[in-house]
Image 1 (cartoon, rainbow, N blue to C red):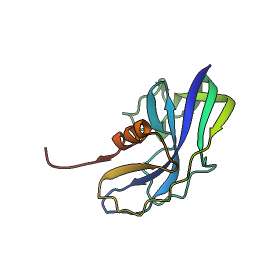
Image 2 (image 1 turned 90 degrees about the vertical axis):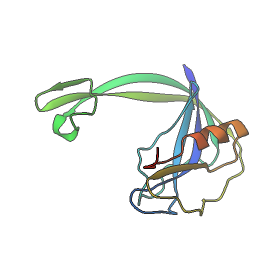
Image 3 (image 1 turned 120 degrees about the horizontal axis):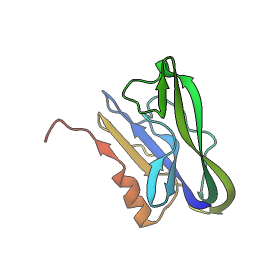
Image 4 (image 1 turned 180 degrees about the horizontal axis):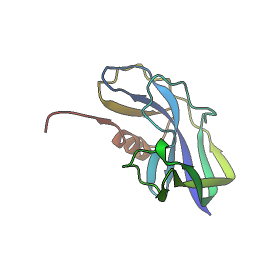
Length: 147
């Protein structure tokens, strides 16, 4: 059994143009790591569903599972558990939620600021601790040609 926290986030990703389209996604803090649950880029997509409107502290069981897929759906540089002709084995992590404790937190409005080209930005959707806010900001990036 392990603990994790579901963290409501706003996300905005850009490619070759600026954007101010922020969508709701979920961050997961587990074993000292923070990551976004939904796959990016978050361009022209609606809010993730269902969405948490507070911090959720969860007790979970972690399972590893695998499934057989058609290998043509995965680029050669994508690491898979096994490739064999037309088929491949994809390994995935399953989280079985055993219990949830909701931590009330004041909601924060959807950001309105514009995000520059070739960037991925995240903001909390609810008030979080200063330490967690710093970790969320550290996940943001703007690509640059300059060295």
